[in-house]
Image 1 (cartoon, rainbow, N blue to C red):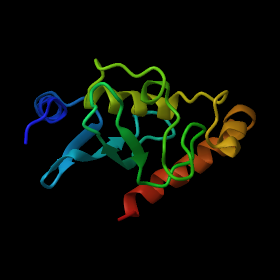
Image 2 (image 1 turned 60 degrees about the horizontal axis):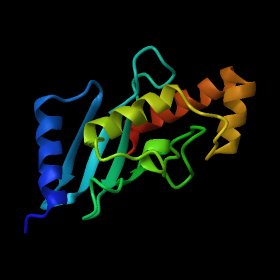
Image 3 (image 1 turned 90 degrees about the horizontal axis):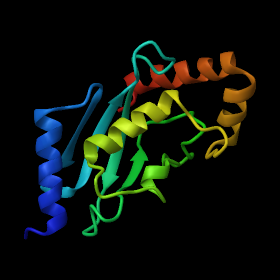
Image 4 (image 1 turned 90 degrees about the vertical axis):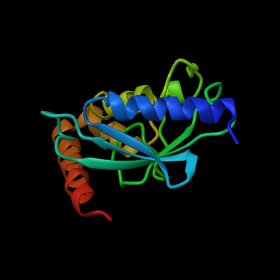
Length: 152
């Protein structure tokens, strides 16, 4: 059955395959265009460099009028990422717009990694460390990066 949401997701998928943004990949799970697996690579020359972070994106039939539910599957230590992997990012909440596609969502999350907003913390320990002890914060991030290589 082809609905507007599914048609749009097919278009998003084609775009991610033909013109993939740097350091990002994503694809629907087997036989389910509404559920995607994605990987974000930590941006070069940042504490996140070398990390491979897995996410899931879950779309409703209201997409693109409503944002997907996006979660990190990989363990994260970041001011704007909750312990359960959900992400505090304005475009996934109140700043959502139908012009965003999967590539734009993943690109925004990738830039959030290096450019957190400690004033809107989802992880208060990470936010405090980011603001008060950057060296210790970066050390914790490096640990998460190393774990990302061995995680299933």
